[in-house]
Length: 381
Image (cartoon, rainbow, N blue to C red):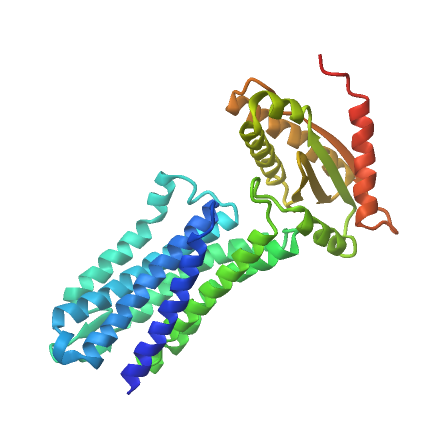
């Protein structure tokens, strides 16, 4: 009866994780972090299927399917893809904290060396029995290597978790900050599994803990997607207004809002087509991300509408001016890399928050400054 309940819990977790995987694949576009999240969900689902089949073959229907080679094989599969899933989480976490360990294929291969070592150790368990052992009669026992495996996975994930937690303290967007801390909590699911592993195989703590974590991560990512502009992958106007309502009340330093739009964007659309115009907007947003990424307290970026973007920075006037210069510098980098027959340039208006202002007041002040700058701009010849 205990084996039936164990298998039912694993089957339920497989269904939940499978639905998360299915829904995540329905999205029309993926960021690098979403690709890692999809991979992580898929790897953990394979791991869960391995343990479900082990229970099915070894305990529920041993007379029909419980051959020794099959039960050992699916249990080994479970351990391998548990480690691979954790590695995918590390890629996801590193991307979320804008790290560099998983940005190129060579770096991914270098970062995966500990994973390769773990996989070799798990495969060697077929002869060494350092992690688990299954007798010819189907009796399954864990060895000390099982706890060691969890300890290694906890240490590996804690490194990225700490990086995310540190970054979250410098994140201006409360939605993004909450998501980063949620991602950083993943090692806790492994730690809980390690603490409860002495209760034996009859309690599927690893499966349940990881499933709950994956479900929370998927829901958090979905919430973020709702707040993002689909084309440029920066915050949308709705999220901006909510952020300003929060930030005008909760800020420690001076607050500046930069309102900007692309010069002569209509000409780009009319001359080269709307697809090229979309590409110009994507490159402009990329320049903003690169410029804001160099600041310890990351400024908030949003697409206000059309070719208009807004950046909010909580800092000194000197740093706000530095951000403006950095934006122009990164946009020039984009121009040089793209080698298009036109040049992207921003007109930027800046406004400082003063007590008594609401979100619309601050936006209007920056928009007025932007209008004055554009009016003084010489006409295009």
